[in-house]
Amino acid sequence: MPIKINIKKLPKSEVQIEGELSAEDFETYFPRALAKLGENIEISGFRKGKAPENILLANIGEMKVLEEAAELALSDSYPKILEENKLDAIGRPEISILKLARKNPLGFKIKTAVLPEVKLPDYKKIAGETVADEAKGAKDVEVTDQEIEDTILDIRKSRGPKINIKDSVPRQATDGQKEEKEEEKPTASENLPEFNDEFVRSLGPFKDVGDFKTKLRQNIKLEKENQKREKVRLKIMENIMQKTEVDIPEILRQAELQKIIYRMQSDISAMGLKFEDYLAHIKKTREELEKDFLPEAEKKAKLSLILHKIAEMEKIVPDEKEVADEVAHILEHYKDADPERARMHAENVLSNEKIFQFLEKQ
Image 1 (cartoon, rainbow, N blue to C red):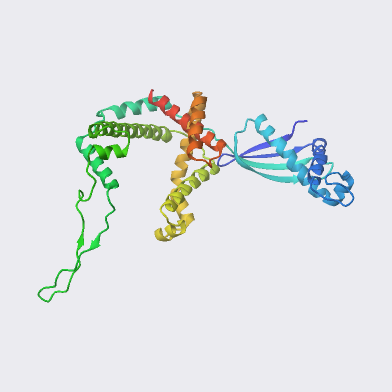
Image 2 (spheres, rainbow, N blue to C red):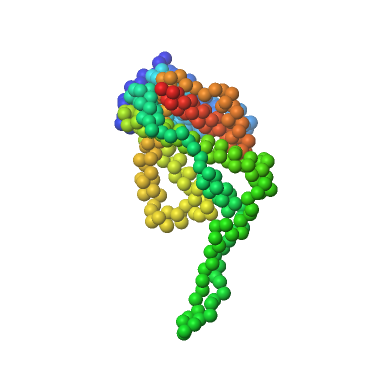
């Protein structure tokens, strides 16, 4: 028998589902609940899980069995309700039991967030116009000799000895002046390894200085091209977001916010600092910090919804082999990573890359 329900839309892309499961259907869950609860109960004179139902019920209590039956019934019914009513629920639902009694319908109320309606503008046109605007007056990516030399100097410094600023021997005081201590700072080229064939071979598979400079120039150019492409992509999405209408669910906003805070905590921990000490240093509480980052979290949530909608409309899906390769790469470098989460991450990254490639071609 179909479940009687009433669906009410709430603010912030949430819905309230109120309904009843018939007494007949609900009753079918009672023996299942009793058996489940009785699996681990030890009753004198009976083997574990083998006591008669009336004995089990007397030891467990009818209300406890009804509560378990309600949980089982709604675990079965909730996915069906979502599917039949085409609700894209996100996050954990809030479930309230309104009526719970033997031989009676099960009354319930469920509140859950759902994927919101995303009203996109003409994103193809916006992408095309943005790419054209960014291309106007744009120069070809070049790498100067000075950039090569600066990078080489940075590499030499990173491989050179760590130099601490130290006090020199106090100079003799004259004319009644007090002795003073001077700080000696080495020049940039002091104590650095010589840049030669032997040095570059120690850095990797390079034949000589010439080969190293050629590959370094290629890498710097590639990095500049990637930065240029990211700048265009960012501009495309900013222009699309400005004209997109969507009511962002609070659960997505909070999820993005916690990602930002978690990354910040990880970075601070990597520097050998405690997050609490960092908060004390900037004179803010965690709540104040979260408030500061809320606009960024909302922007990230909106971007995620837009990308999801474009992928849906254009039927963009990542290649299965590429996903498998990326998952294997993640698990190889992060031994403790959860395979399912790694797969979700890989699908998301590869799907987004295909979406951006699609928009860039408009």
